Image 1: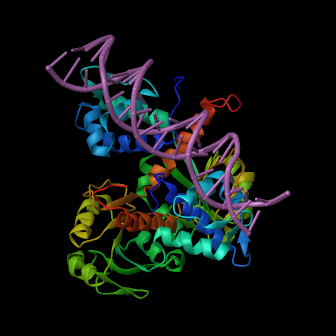
Image 2 (image 1 turned 45 degrees about the horizontal axis):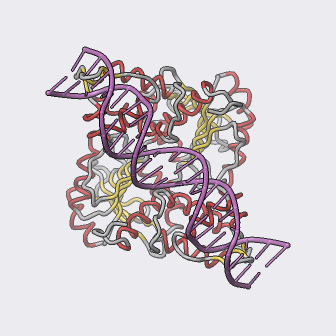
Length: 215
Length: 215
DNA sequence: GAGTGTGAATGTATTCACAGCA
DNA sequence: TGCTGTGAATACATTCACACTC
């Protein structure tokens, strides 16, 4: 927005600030200090992060909760509804479908795809399941920009390819296979095993590195 | 390990390198260039990342796949089995239980906890479900260091607290509620809604930022 | 010649220190 | 006085350039 260099992963922090602000339905005002405490950041960092996108506070007073919530939402692109396609309606897919966290934030899984003939044609909740070959027309018609992949590893790349030719803009990949996408498509990998590997690294390296001498 | 300053999130990249090396069961040798291509990094970065932990390659030749795989595994603490406790055996919890990705990497979900009387006492696959009040003795006896939380938001903090008094060292939190943990406990949040918010940010900001002039 | 390993240089993110406003 | 907002200083991560070894 402003002409500043915006740090690469400010988005994840904004998302955290927002989570705090959403809880504060009661309070009128808050401060960078309180935001910081809650999110585990420093107060300067909170102010700096916000400053990349505008001047949302009042000097001496703090931030007005409601308007800050609005402003951050706008920066994150959450002042609208997002329609989502789910590819792979297995256990994980179904778990995501039933998650209320999405709907509350304006993310609507609107259609599902699966090759299982048992599932195709049926509906789960109020979404319909189609065979993947129907992706392009359906995704185009419904103005869907985001896709979630929860298929077995072997099917990951082809699922991504189908989403891409359907005109999707971003993919959230839950499979542990890696995917290649053209640079104009945003890809985010959420690999559960990787998460545990990282945790493992932190645990064992705390053992190697002496707790007092630091690194 | 060595006296170098190790970058904060080298672990996630190591985890990616490893994924590539695991696929290469056939090949004997590889190079930083090929690792880079596959993982979307630069070859220098690959070499630098590896150099923080030792000298694993041969000048002029490259890396021996098997030994590099071993070395990275050791750095990540994957040359052992990790026992895991699962708190919350709902849809997501069950999806994780049935995921083969964990077992293959030495992560074993060994026990589950849930307050639902329907589930307590029964087993799913070959793990048993207990009431949460049993956490401390069970986790201690079974040498469990990692906990995964997949409970509703309201129950998140108390689940974490129980894990912590049971002596857990690290927590992977799938709930969208934020948790406070003492500094000696590693916490990793995997919040699905956050992931989508970040994607949303990338999509809308690509619109603001001109595609050619860059940022 | 091919490819690793690494100090030095550059680029990016964070923190400091303080000016400015309610 | 209290708290935001921000240029300047510092710390950190990445990339460059090249010495080194097979």
